[in-house]
Image (cartoon, rainbow, N blue to C red; front, side, top):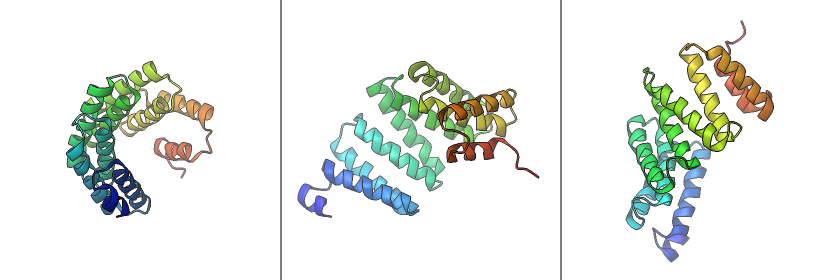
Length: 193
């Protein structure tokens, strides 16, 4: 409230404080409030920023995450498509943030539709990340794990080899005791009897 009173509702510092508030709501599990604050931030940024401004894309990305966390999937996809369009135009198709937006959209589509189009798009993003960032970059590794989980869940050919490669990657980068490794293994290996 202090920022709003002294700087105005759409000032950069006011919106930064609101972003922190949205994050705090999210961390506290207050998902509806997180979504409401992110919607407010996007509305205010739309008032003062160019429609292709990177800060608007960042705010839209946060809104998309909040929409997904609130299970409002029908709204997630168009917002993430807008994020991707802005990043493609402003940053280019090979920029890490553009690739990250592509992954988010492909991952969403792979999870929502039983067709292989989302899975194929996710693999294409993985290949682009490996080409641009390198196979050992965190974004490439995360995408490889996500892609592997989808292969296993759908019983696709090559899933066993993908799991073996992902395990080797985990061993090299974070170790099998890391919580991310444990979560991954829980998704790709059957529970013991």
